[in-house]
Image (cartoon, rainbow, N blue to C red):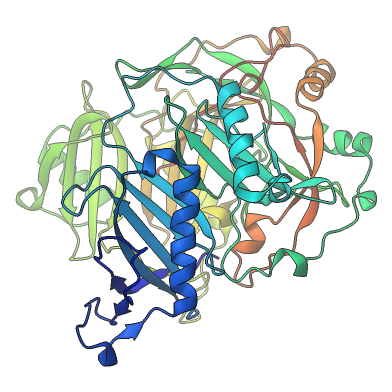
Length: 539
């Protein structure tokens, strides 16, 4: 798990860090005139700082006029330090600026260039040029072998970005990456680490145990394991493209598609799914039959909001309720302050006044820990009991046309202390409509509904493509794996890194090749789409 960085020593406002005068720092960030009272940056580290600045200036010509420097020493929780250097053209001019971080050995590591003028009006650079320039840069930075990194087309998804992944035994190790970003002028404006980052506690690469690739099951066996996860789904509003003018997504007609509904990784020794996070797993669950009450609920006045709050166990009065406008629905928003830590909120649709959302909002800022079981030893409702209460709320307030829903994901993954979250997708012809959904949160101590989100559900029956016209699963699978074949790689799963007892050891995994141009299979044509499901979770 990534450790927190604390700024405990920071200063150095010299004309340049290449000056020969000693750099003296105190814990409160002051530069002292009397050297005997100051904490001095060791001569060894002063040399490392000088060499680091020299290295980046040699490789990044735009830094030629950056003569003013400041330095910060960032202390990690484990007592180790990291150095951050900021370069500017002068003390007074804050932009352009260049931030450089040194690794624990004092080598230049990640950097970020904040340009003086915005990029938006410039033409976009071609990705082939980005890849070529980035490859040359990696050779300059790490040496002819690029430090054992190789260009990774799977992760180089943005046009101006090139991603390089560490190779071990000839296979990509997905946790160790370099990401380079290039602007339209061909200048490198950032160097960072990539996906699935390892934390500060992770052992050095030479101390990790990497299984022999020969221990993996065959690709044919892996493909059979993958086949179980390629499933049909509907989207009522598939994204077609992003509109730069309106800064909004443009949507198309309802669609039926095939996609892999699992975490993307298959354990290459067991053939089993590798979960994204502790408690997560396959997205699809057994279908649940529902019997909606069929009564549409509207809230158009503070008096009606009082009654609605009371239905959720919140006693209020009209004069205590604040009325405003919902950012999400553009309808009304009614707020009741429970106490200094919690608010209760109700939101409605703009035109109809239909009730679509209730939530209890925790106003405390960050650092809140949610216990997994009651600290007082009280028995909580089981996930199954909580599910029944969530279904009851769905039947009471949801659309009257709903007949079947599918819980998506696992309850444990959406648990926050005693509150358990459920996502229900509408089901049509036995197939989930993944963007026609309701979220419900249940308190496992009291059984109360703490959240009910229906902003994305359809209130009238949908007209969707006929699943009888879909290509066969066998045909879809063949096309999927032809274009996006399974690849053998190493990975330390996030579930291991983020668990209560972190483990950083890598495992062998199979993963389908990523492609921006090949997202999901259109079930009616059997061909790939260029857009994929975009899913928003209000938790």
